Image (tube, rainbow, N blue to C red):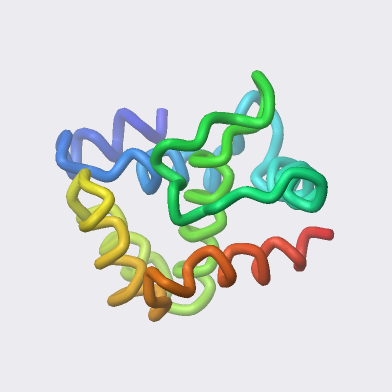
Length: 128
């Protein structure tokens, strides 16, 4: 349902990470809440280091937990906590490309692309 509303409002020029992220943040994924997936990602990356600067090309851990959905949801949560839903709307207005994704991260989340991987690892520690 969330995708239907998001696509109706923002069209098809929405970054998939934020599109899946808002759906996971608000409604979970495969009947599990965002926090479930973030705990799972946190455990996984302790054993299998992941470079989140390549987030758009990462697959899932398994058929249940997807990096893009989980990290996208985490980013939506971080922005909503700091800037309210107006900040999340800005994420959803981001274009589709990786370059536009990182421009949004820098301008909205205030994290430079060179620091993004470290930032995600630090945020995941909260779900340890």
